[in-house]
Amino acid sequence: MYLNCGERYDIIDHRSYKHNLIYDLSYIHCSLVVYLADCVFVTDQPEITAHPGNVTKTEGDNLTLSCNATAHPPPTISWTRDGSPVNTTTDSRIMFSEDNKQLTITNVNRTDSGEYRCLASNSLGNDTSNASMVDIQCK
Image (cartoon, rainbow, N blue to C red; front, side, top):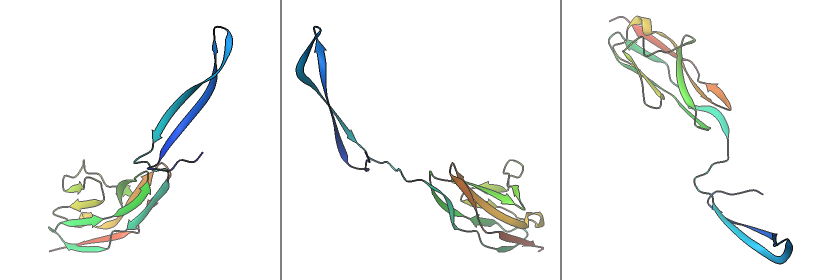
């Protein structure tokens, strides 16, 4: 049986039952009503739908890179710089938005230059963005 979201289903069960060791010819009529709402049965592996772009900044500027992805179940977004994970615990200038779709670096310096990518992943797979080349120039 295939069920559709937002529809009501009546599930009926007819069973004969035993009464005093003699089979009664009547039936028990049981009914269960099931209503499926807010359900999604479609599953998709992540796909990057908005890639971060190339950026040139001057030392001391702030920088924000953005990335978006679709998938079900919803993907987890992470970032890399030159192939290594971007880590906010070692540098307080680096922040992620609540959903990790934006990476912000305040007061950039030349060591922030490099190739940035976002990675979207869920239980079905992952997708990696195109490279964003970040070039930080001297004042």
